[in-house]
Length: 631
Image 1 (cartoon, rainbow, N blue to C red):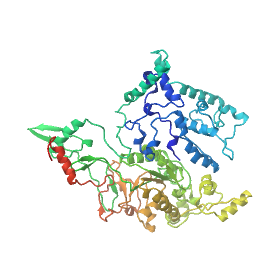
Image 2 (cartoon, one colour):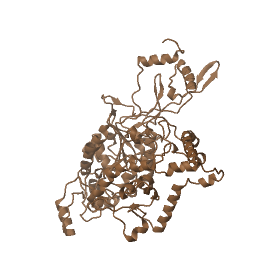
Image 3 (cartoon, rainbow, N blue to C red):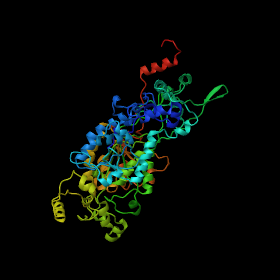
Image 4 (tube, rainbow, N blue to C red):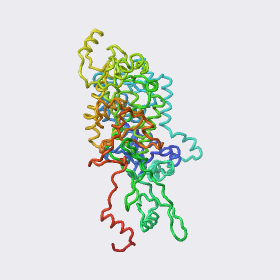
């Protein structure tokens, strides 16, 4: 669960500035008042500022009055209250253990609420970096005081226990207090200039002047060459950097007179060479259109700007009716040829690299997501995480469901495929591995591979019926009544799809896709097989012949009802580079447009190019005409 209410304090116009240099210019006392005072707020941001939160799409759901433009320490702590009241306290009341990972000031706000600490006393509470604080609660959600032997790892007014050795905790708190009380390295800077103490009036006037200067001063510490240009948008559109408007229009009018396309917001002037009294244009590099055949995959070319007649190049516009599916990166089990199933193995080094490359490729092609779905298995979760990290969208919520887990391989879990094939013969091996309705041998109720012995399934899986036989077995074993659910001991491909496809149609479709959200699904091979069987209408007797490469984004276009791939710039044939199995032809059937015509462009990057209306033509003509002329 992620919430903006647990964000760090908003420092307003101080955001991005050097603490030391700001203190040197404006005075340490004023800067420290902004940093450490309970109620003092730094100068606010404005909508034109680089760090204005309204231009970040992660805050798109917030009302304008919810967007903090500056905050005091008290403001920051106060906004954590709804998280405690509506979410955290509810989870604790349900008997669940809760982990909160946040920032010093928002954690201080939660501590203030839990311990009932006053406004003035809370400033004495230090929250050292990286040291967990543990609270235990009674039935009334009141924090339980630490025992006498635990007081050396607590702070005054707090009932939380720090999980650290007393000596190390004392040092960490000391460092935290020193950091909060002083501008870093300020004494060294100020030793060059010593100013007499200011009177209260002088301090007030200085503060007023500093607030007027701080935004102008901020520009000195921003290196435009290293930073992404401020596009003046909310993060959902792509505009361009500011240019000299007069210069742009002066050159643009010549472009129009010569019959060229001109867009003042996206002007890209070609160098013109004078030769024999004539203007010759340099030849433009030709874009290679993606090739498509009925037997090959639809590969979307590397992104480029598209040209609108009379207006020039326009930004990339992403569609919302796309689903991106990705099989997790390789694991050591994949490399060794072992049956993995529900065994929770981590990604191998190659798998991490595959996931990162997938994220880079999606970012390069302009993708953005609004919702991310994964299984309960670490390899799928980690793959989603690495993809999101490369796309700078770790803040997105991740919805996890066991119904996106890999197929449960029963007693085959952890065994070598080559050994199983040698021991049981190729026919039996293929029936277990690829048979649509054939189950491998089941595990026993006491096998470490049985999900009923895994806390994540026994405690948190609630959407399957109870099992009489498992309840009886566990009750006899524990000598007390123990209600158990019917968890899979083995699954055929059909069993896996019977849980995956309903989750897609009953959860992902109505919650995300039908709402226009852009969806990423990170899962395992057989779960993705089930989704593709449903979306691409692959026959039951052909689905077992479909292979899903590790770490390769598969884009399903809801309009053309087909799978499209992304050009990775390698120039290699996708069917030669990746193994899609004998049923690849069902995956890469010719794409069709909503009107039934064949979609041979393999393109989902751009919307349809607008057609110039009469009013558009009149506008262009007015631009061509001299100032004051009648059109």
